[in-house]
Amino acid sequence: MSSRRDWLRSSVLGAAAVVVGKHRLFAGPATPVITVYKDPGCDCCAKWVKHVAGHGFVASVRDVSTSGMDDIKRTMNVPPALQSCHTAVVCRYVIEGHVPADLIKKLLAEQAPVLGLAVPGMVTGSPGMEGGQAEHYNVVAFERGGQTRVYAKR
Image (cartoon, rainbow, N blue to C red; front, side):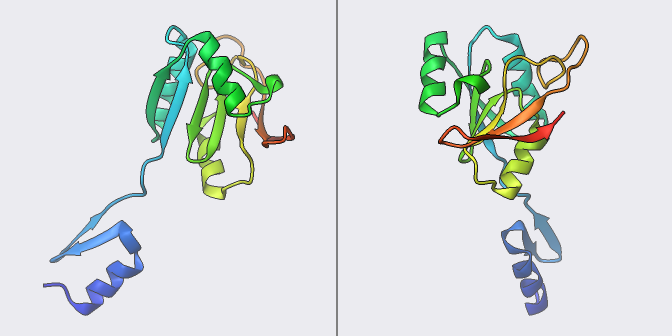
């Protein structure tokens, strides 16, 4: 039987811990689900999906035709200058292109007041685009009205 002190201690930890007898069972934070819209034949998109899955995201992949991708980008308000090969959604954010998983986690943690993040184009050295001479690139935050700013440099 748990003591009142054990119950209070587990309550302070919130839903992350439950005390059962003398044992504490810990449950981590909910795993973010990222829904990825991509061309079924795109290898770099598949590599990016593996990248985000390897960093703790649950990836739900939706294979879409090229014309369907244009509709998705338009519907999700991705500015044309920021577009890349795939578009993803995690929580309330749009993720366009080869955005590194650590920056997606940072965005989620700080709950930035933006629509999403993008790595425009197909930058060598970005996640999913490994191989060859890595290029420096910007990860761009964008808002619904089209305003942009550099979120991070890589």
